[in-house]
Structures are given as C-alpha cells and as structure tokens.
Length: 378
Image (cartoon, rainbow, N blue to C red; front, side):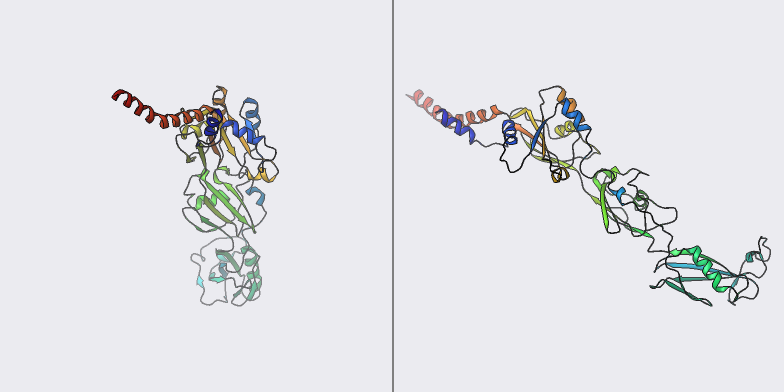
C-alpha cells in the first residue's frame, strides 16, 4: 500500500520540479547540459556585484572609433562658386558689387575697389570627380576641400582676369552625411559639418527614439563593421558617443527588456521591465511573489543564460534565494535583473502529499456519503 501511495505521488501533476530536484539535476555527472546552482547568500552577493554586466557591454561602439574628415569634396556634391573681378572682367554680364565704390579695405582687396563685379555659379561634381568652369575648363576637385578649389580657380584665372578672387562653399554634400533609420522620430540623411557632430547629436537631430532609452538598441555601422549598445548606456561625450564620419549608419531598434515567471506563482507570465533597472525583489513583487498555498519559500530560483559566458566555456547559472532568511530580502533588493531572466518558484514538498490526499478525498468522499445515507435510511 505504501509503494502504491508513493508511486501515486510521483505521478501527480505539477507546475515544475521541486527545489530538491533542481539541486539533484545540477549534481548529475551525465547531464547533457551542465549548469551550476549558486546560493544567494552574503558572500556570493559580494562577488556578483563586482562582476561586469552581461549582454551588450559598455564600450562596444567605442571600438569603431576612427580618424577622418568631413570637408572632403566627392562626386555628387554641389558647389557654390563666386568669382570677383575688377576693371575689365571676363564675365561681361557680372553684377556689380553693391557699395564697392565707397568701400574701404586694405591689401588691394577688389571688393574695396570701384567697379568690382561678382559672378556666381552652382556646379555639381561629376562622377569622375571633376567640375567645369568658364575660361578654366575641367578641374579635378574630388578629395580636396572648398579652400583648395578656391586656390585652383584663382590660379586658373590668373593672367586672364585682373586680380581674380574666388569664394567656394559646399551647398550640398550627400557624401559627407550620416544616415539615420529605424525607430526614430525622423529618419533620413544628416549633413555633417566641421563642427564634428557626435552620435547622440544625430539621434537628437532625428527627434530621439520613440521608445525609452533603456529599451532602445543603437546599431552603429561604419565601414562594413557594426556594434550594438543600448541607448541608455551611451554617455554624452563618452567613448561610445563617437564623432561621426561620412557614410556612418545609425539604426535604432526597439528591444523591450523582460523576464519570465514560472512555478508556484499566481500565474505564469512574461513581465516587461518598464524601468531603466529592476531588482530581483521588484521582479518578485510584480509577479505576486510565492503562492502561500503551494510554494517553497526556500527554493526561489533565477535562471540566467549568458550566451557570451557559455561560448567561453562557462555553464549556465541558476541562483537560489532562500526567502526564509531575513538577509535574503536585502540581497534581493540589490540583485539586478537582466533581460530574459527567468524566475522559477519551486513547489513545496508537502504540496505533493496535499494534492494526493485531496485526490483520495475526491475519490472516497462520495462512497462514504452514500454509505452514511444508506445507514440512515436503514
């Protein structure tokens, strides 16, 4: 009869393993998936808080830092060219400069001389990196700066015009731009200037992330390499707040952090963090804590799978919290939850026996009731 009762207890439905079964599985030498169980006591807690955070660590994007310039002219750029002349001009229809007759300047500046005229051009850099101007012909400007083009124009007009001077500005430069896409308020191409915009400047230019910074991942691509970090981990002016270079791509991806709850809880659920950080105590409170009628408060487990650590040869870790010890609540207040953690609250050993007794009562109570009614009728 005892053997029958024990076998019946073993086959009863359950929401998961007991605490004893979890610890027993960790000691199995032939288990295909090795894992370790760490008791969250004071000594273990001191070691854990000194460990670096897992996931996407700080400094990932900083590894893509490069030196570069944003003032180089490239094919597709549009240049605004102004040529200033005095006396007999090459450009007969050039407009006179207002106030030139009364201007006072130094160093023989043609803008200060009477009869000074200006001619404006807007030219696009061809696919071969050249532009063509009257009286000069084609000039290779790709890879140079606006100041270099000014000197090239003045040199080309020397001997053909009286004291020619030029001013060149870049009206549009698709090449010297960064691109923003994904979960931002405004996607598009952001022109880069000599002010040297940074990563967070670009995100602010795009109107910021649609989700919270803690739930937004920045995917930064430069030169065929990319790195990812959560937006909330990037500090203004820090190593990860890179100075942008032409061609950089910034994609914001919404990845809400969450944890799961199983076992002897009010209900199985997946819970979003909805906060920059979350402690184990707050996670337990959000799921309603252990169920008084079936949970084992000594066996509250947190399952954590760190892919980087497993790839390095370390086994997955299961942390066990004993809520019957007062210090456990202080530890739980300071133990940080991580994305995709799993809380499992084991069933109490006595709960199995209680279930079995309840089943026996359901089986035999109708028989006893029928017997009592029969005896009373007799």
